[in-house]
Image 1: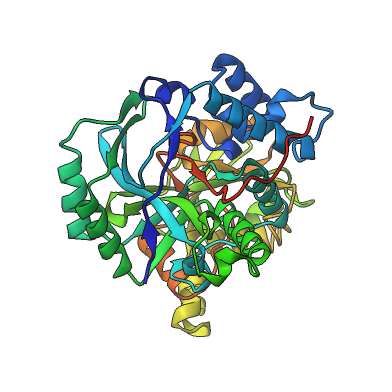
Image 2: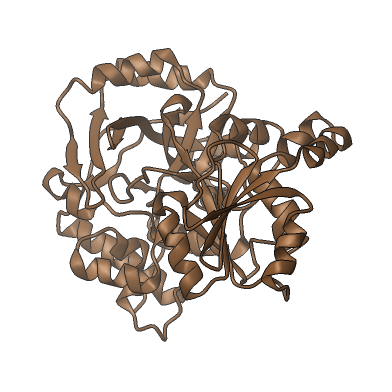
Length: 435
């Protein structure tokens, strides 16, 4: 059963929230991040990407970068840019994009629920990315980027959040990408008890976005738990702050998944004609000329190469072979749009066997549109693919099976902002500042 607890958030003062709130650290290149913190000096990106405070000759993962992040965070607290609520609360966080409302509950999730698979994953993580966030959390003594979680819609929670949203906002602003952000604080003990009780009845909650941040928070929590195993805290079975990680939990019926496009640098030594002949073995191909093709159904794909768009339709005989060869559970994975593209084009034809580490492939969020794909093919790539988006139910099914999707299978919009809610894991004063 899910253990989702309220917490005393470190958060920006109300009139500064718009300036502090920042997109997730990993959507920026180093140069983009540097330009953003120059544009907005109190952007949370200054903490999330403290490498912006160093010359490019200093690695993003240098120890000094993490201690700089800690120093900036402490300085912003001392200057009163951030304040800390005196009581444990939940928070309601609403994002509005093009008229679509997405309302989540901000709280802290038990690392034990992650370990016992109450919190379910659908993607594998990369060690280098984990280490980066482990260092950031551990040195800063705070979880600074919320994990994006999803649960199957619950009418009781919907009623609670709807009632709270009738009250005055804690924050209300529009970000530069035209997403409107609203937040409310939930401090009423009876409402807190009710929310906690509803979550405790849930048997599954799913990571939608933030697998690396979640894994890193869990590893920091386990490290600190081990350090305390012989202490007074442990003997009294008192939970450490690091036993929980910062999350925003959304009902599945309010979420939208965009496709995650693929672009590839070369044709693996094939000519264009030979490449198309190979693709025709598994797909019917329709030449669309200069008219972009955005798939409108599962098992169809758009392909852009040599200034031409093509529609690819997965052949029925190939689908039948999957249906006949694999059991029900395996078929769920094998018939994902991203799996078919990977298993019938990217791997066997283009030689991209592990898209997580292959430098010949890159990924473009569907929110950027097909013009971005055309631009990339003209600049540094040879071929691009559009896909029909993975559904939230497919994500749930894969996670329930304990399986993993291919990397970059989902792109959620709108993105949660970092810096609006921080969770301190500082049980006792540790790390000293380093210059």
